[in-house]
Image (cartoon, rainbow, N blue to C red; front, top):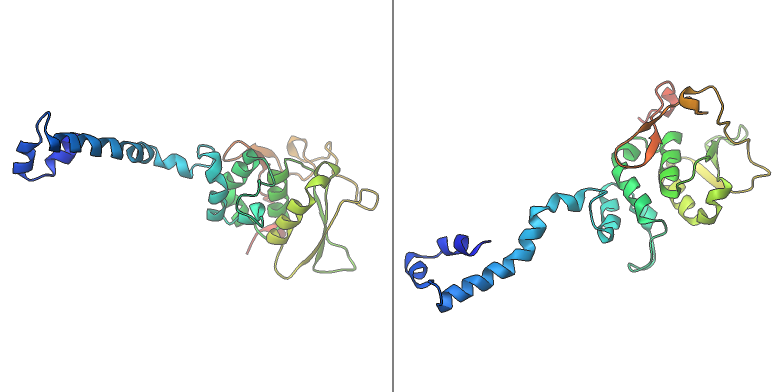
Length: 213
């Protein structure tokens, strides 16, 4: 708040006494200086809640707003993040999309790809084990198994059991990059720019079984 604005709030007698060189004038100068840092923050306060503009230290807090705080779950508040802050910003930017598709194969794959920066996760429901999903983790993400497991547990339907495995010998064949999907995607879903800097496949349009209820 500028000194002139503060001075206008004072009674007329105080305004007359707040001239240059007066004690009250000096006090008003100090008040202006004390307000300056807060006003600088308030002038750009929307940046605090923008996933790609907020300070690094505030990104983990924003994950709570979009129900993705399980990604940064740690025993200590000062523990290092389990993923680069840029990927955490991607998760926050796509929080609405992930919330809409939570509990679906598309939602789980998208969350895993955004968090790890790795594609090729395969979800399989064995014919002999209904309501059970096996998540095959690509070798490039095998060193982030704890992070993958937390995401899988949070994104799966409540009534479904899951198994996370990295055994490439027992897993299914990885998706073929030259399959017949548009834009060369094996899922038949075109990759399109999404909100934020990360690119994610667009939600399936012809798979009603994945549409959230």
